[in-house]
Structure formats: structure tokens, C-alpha cells
Image 1 (cartoon, one colour):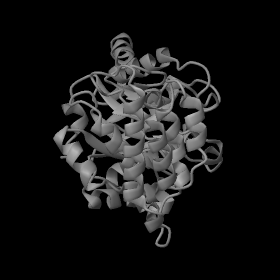
Image 2 (cartoon, helix red, strand yellow):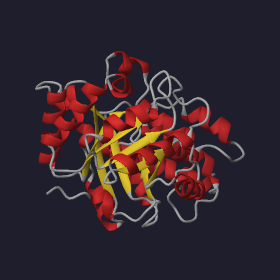
Image 3 (spheres, one colour):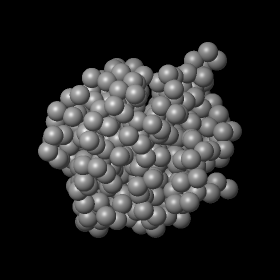
Length: 329
């Protein structure tokens, strides 16, 4: 009997979305370090390619996406936060193999299947949100993942590809009895444009209630505060809320005091992130990856724009430190 931790969490559940080149062990640790117990329930890994993970040569190149630092693990344990590995691909047998590999690692609490990423190059390969147009293959993938896993299997998806087909699509997924379906209220074609349609998310909830009450439904899209998250959970009757871009607006999203922080607090967190990134990855990860985070910390205070411009020109940790030291003077 697989233990479904999702059903043990207090509702509404708050999760941090899986994001490419964002939710690695470093950023997850940063978020955990400033989050209060009970405010954040589940973290996700970056997207992990099943083809890459299962390839004899390429496997080690993507294994870093499964990395959980010792310091992150301590925070996960101390704050009772779960962690889920998210995988994507197009071949059911690779999902089966990847699930077994992840379970052998014994570091994760669940496995999530990416059927929502809207990036065009991935969609052209038939992966992620492209699976919305291939329900038979999608179902094979879910069942293969469940067969290879001794952890609860969940799905993150959207309400359609080029047009909204929420009920038709979610009904197909519910037949596979996943532990959870997280529904982003946009189609693939919309990318991140326009407003997320939470009425479509509510349709998924109603369909779940009718077809498979055991599967949980979480909503995702345009939630930028915990208050808004609680409000949407109540209004649309979802079991949980997934936060994506909201964390870029405020890294302290999961802190009980999530009000605007001082420039000093923001820059201290920027340096902590830079230092941890360097200590964790050394030269094994492109330093430029850090620059998307600089944008998070250098905003909302006088002088933020020129400071951010200078930081975006850096190529090494020492350069970042020198600039921050100048600001302190």
C-alpha cells in the first residue's frame, strides 16, 4: 500500500511550483530558510527529462536535478515540508524506469508528471502540455509511472492546448487515479499571457467529485499572496494552491511576515543565495543562471535599477561580493 502523503496535509495545501533553472536545491533551501512552519507544505524539483535520466551516458548530466543538499534536507525535516520530483518525456517505458530510479534514491516523497509546461520546443517534441492532445499516450504514461513507483504519483497540467477542453481532458486523467492533479488555468497557447481562468479549475473539481473523489485537485495561476491563495481555495473549492511566479514577486511568500522587506534584507538574501549557489555547484553550473534571481532581490527600493544593471554584468561570485560591499558603505 503506497502512503499518500498528500492526504495527510492540512488544507489548503500550499506548494511551490516546479520551475526550470529555478527550483534547484539551492533556491529551495533559500525559500525554506525564510518560510515559516505550516506556511509551505510541498516543494518540487526542476523538470527532469526521463530520456536524460535513463540514458547511460546522459544520466549523470541530469542527476544534479535530483540533488538535495544536506542543509536543505535538515530544513525539510525541521519544517515538515515534503519534496516531489517532477519528470517529463514521451515514452511510457522511460517513465517507468525513471520512477524506479527516483524511488531507489529514497530522497523524495512523491513523483509528479509534467503535462503542463508550455515551452514551444518541448511541445514540438510531444512532451509536457503536448500530451493534452494525446490522451491515450498520457494515460499510458501515468499508469507506467505508477507501476514503477512506490511513491504517490501526481500530475501538473493545463486546461487545454490551443483551446479549452478542461472537462474532456481532466476526465481522461481521473481514469488513472493519480494522487493529485494540479490544474493551471491557462491553455498552452496562452503561455503566461492573460488571466488564469479559475472557473475552469472549479470545473475540474466538480468533475473529480463526480468521477473520482479520491484524487485531490490543486489550482495554479496568478496567486501573488497567501490571502489571495486562501480566498481562491475557498471560492473554487480546491484542495491546495500552487505558487509559481508569485515567488518572484516576493521570496518571503511563505513567511507569516511577508510584507515588503528592507533593501538590506533583500541584498543579504541575494548574497546568501549567491554564496550557496557557488558552494553547491562550483563551476558545474553556468553562473548566468543566478542572474534571474538577482532580479528578484533588486527591486522596490531607491537605486535598485542601477544596482541590478551592475549585477547583471557580473561573471563571478567575487564580483557580486565587491558590488554589494560598495553598496554597504
